[in-house]
Length: 201
Image 1 (cartoon, rainbow, N blue to C red):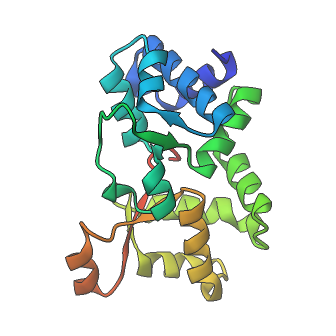
Image 2: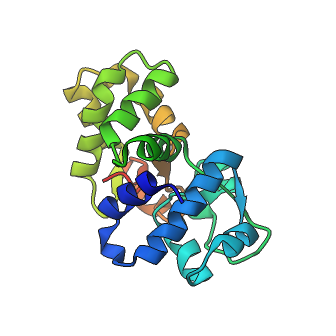
């Protein structure tokens, strides 16, 4: 187990109040980082605690997401499953958070955001920590409307890039479209709904 990663996760997920559980999560995230993906069977083998609880926490907090969802960029379409052959990957933003945490012992969101957007070549990377903080600030239950994203982008002088930035935010795992559950609401309000990754704020 990487002690720095354990300390970083404990500082963020202190509500779990279970060091053994956090230790298991640390080992699993380190494994995914090294191997790029993980199966539910391997998660079971790496778990000292209740396997179902650990998998549910990892899935609920979007620390890992099903490989099929990773391709489709819509988290809600992949239901929680205990299928041993289910394969999971780590969103890019979580990968960068985990890498930094393993070195520093800190869940450094701002640094991870900057690193992520510099790496994908975003010309406005310096504005991304502020943008993402505002997304979470304006969200309700980690849901935010597309028109609110546009307003935030406008406030930051990025209105013309709203569409491109939404694509980037989805691509790095910061948010996902809610196409099915919120279809009626989206049509009614004439704006799409997005789910934010709950592990960031």
